[in-house]
Figure 1 (cartoon, rainbow, N blue to C red):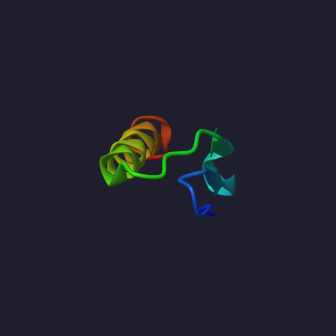
Figure 2 (figure 1 turned 60 degrees about the vertical axis):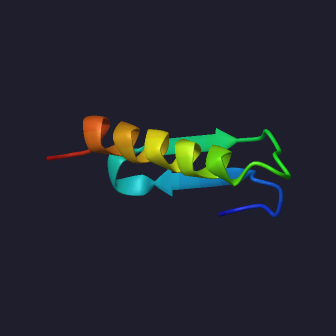
Length: 49
């Protein structure tokens, strides 16, 4: 789920993983790309092979 100001929730039931981002950023689209890269890295590292 994505909020309009950069808030986000990611739920992966298969890996029993939940990530929540409460911070808001209105004028920095790079912050969203960095958050998404971090989350992809976490899922790749801790996800099931």
